[in-house]
Length: 138
Image (cartoon, rainbow, N blue to C red):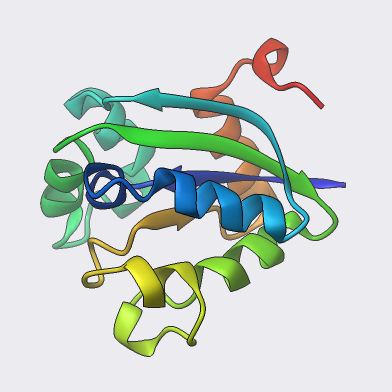
């Protein structure tokens, strides 16, 4: 069993797509073992995306991720990271495969509806950032 972090980004929450995305997660065989809706503070967004601090898009990314509520979830299942990434689709919705979340719901590279961890180490860090172990119910 593997775990990964999923975020329904502000654009998708604002457009009322959280339920559609959750349905796709559950239909894929992944289990949601923790979930909450929050509004990220600027400090939290900057800390969470610190790995991108030197990149030109960092400021815009933090502006966007603090622009409204997000839904954060821990997903569990066999190959959860790769399964969630396939379900999300390519970062750029224009390049995403048909039937993926980003193809169906994404607006552009930034407003692409979802975030997902890219590796086991990243997943562990990202999950711990948002959820104490006692809040993850397997």
